[in-house]
Length: 395
Image 1: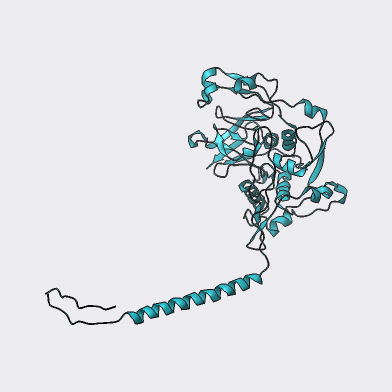
Image 2: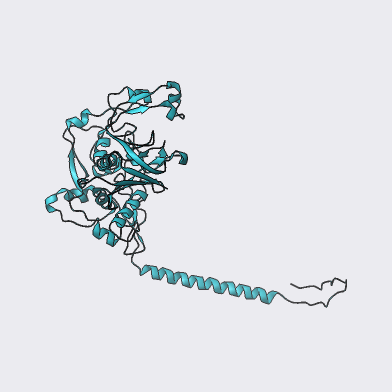
């Protein structure tokens, strides 16, 4: 390779200088070889170092298996929770049925810290700090519940199930109990009408399946109930069938609340006493469109347990059936009523806090303007609330 003579701007030639590039090529090749050799050595050293380290926790824990029947469906996410002791996430799974058989005997149970995400959810739910439907999955609702508990206990607010949180979040009684299906349970089952008109013609909008009924009684996801009872045929339940469920018994209510606060960004409803102590925390659904979300100070105007529901076609312009009906319908009470088992009306016309037939979906932005809670949380809130109580809706 040569550099030939070049021409100056004035047209004259500059001195010809012939210079070989081969020394530079050889230098670059030698440098590349040295870099490759160095990378190989450092890579081997890194592998050797990792061999001497303790194995990290798995990050792809097995999700709950099975699907729910009837109105509900769910795809589980990996169960991961960060601990305070290490920087690595620990994979936490729902305990296998064989591992929980001994956890139903109160006489042999000793108070202890939660051992997994499910037990943390259960301990929170017993304190009226709801993580939503108990499912064993460390999702955003569980994280927000942990943050509420940590704030209440004056702990570092992280949303993680660390050592300090575990030491305060104790299980004082067995996490599981047995539920026996009764004749009344089977008698209340109803197929749910597919249209607004069909629903209005039913005597009651009750549970469709025993699985649905049992899951709601246990404040749990149907997939969790199926996981705990793998031998049960949920399509052929008879009177006397015994199933294992989470034991969720909340502390009795001893006082009324002073105020409720709804946080739109977090999609939570929190209830406080007159000394600003947290009495309850619930995930809630909010309006799908921002312009439909009320803001500021509202007040409870009415508390109606087991309500019916007035279907007004004007509120459902997206429904072809509503456009064809062109008249109001009265839907009967029941857990599958559009407002669930409790209606807590606010002093803004048409707005309220209420239950829902789809508790697993609570926490979304999907309503027409009201605030939806799981039926069991709406019922608990109704016992804390009173007509005239302020409800602050905050960004």
